[in-house]
Image 1 (spheres, rainbow, N blue to C red):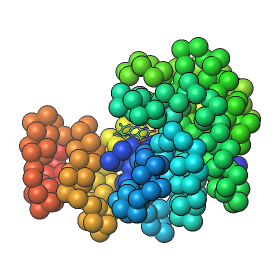
Image 2 (cartoon, rainbow, N blue to C red; image 1 turned 90 degrees about the horizontal axis):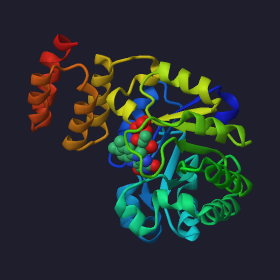
Image 3 (tube, rainbow, N blue to C red; image 1 turned 180 degrees about the vertical axis):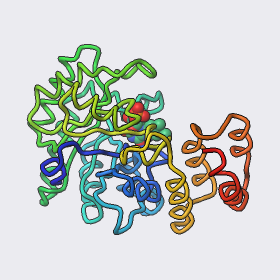
Length: 301
Ligand SMILES: Cc1cc2nc3c(=O)[nH]c(=O)nc-3n(C[C@H](O)[C@H](O)[C@H](O)COP(=O)(O)O)c2cc1C
């Protein structure tokens, strides 16, 4: 992927289970997002089941550049899944950041940061199997309490041939605590490959702040884009046009009512007064949502 060579700061849409699917990726790309990640996909079932592939991975010609994120605990499933998506994407990413209990019980997600040998092996095996060197092989991690362990993990992964690394600047047990920008800076200074910072980026001002404090080559946002998909284009609140674009995209790409509605609930959270929010959240059909938007949206912003 040439993005990191060509752009000063690559602006990325994070992997989000249930949310960073094709229609949402199309939307954020219209508003300044340079690169989008798929939701996390379980590599073993993706590799073994055509049904899983059909339901978990939907893309289109205008959905590029795209990184497909996998959860894996065996290198073979990560590397073979990479081969399966090679023609339809620009890279694969290994999830080493999901902190949920079920993931730890399965041996996937954030627990992998304590197994650098495995993460490095997964990267190495995958790099070996993919001949196209522009196809990226990346990892997304959380930090350790002792940041030297994170630096060590990143260096091992770098030696294995990783293309870039994303760091969510919190430990496995942290949730709402402030993102540790100093840790991200330390990691950035110890690596040659591009580093992407993740955590609490909600505006272009945040992008500039994180860049200045850490020197990273890219930023990744999840909740900031859910709340305002136009964030990377410089808007501080979801503009009306973006809401309308979302409705158009989701209708034309066959998005389910629930998905369309959930995204709208996020997008309108800041612009609707509380009483209106309650009403909007209770709408139960596409026609009710469309009629609400047509009749009231402009009034409330
Ligand atoms: C709804 C939702 C789904 C998520 N799904 C994933 C996922 O599939 N893979 C992953 O690595 N992180 C996932 N995350 C974590 C985000 O990618 C990100 O690391 C985290 O939310 C911190 O970034 P933020 O402050 O910009 O939200 C998810 C977060 C949210 C809110």
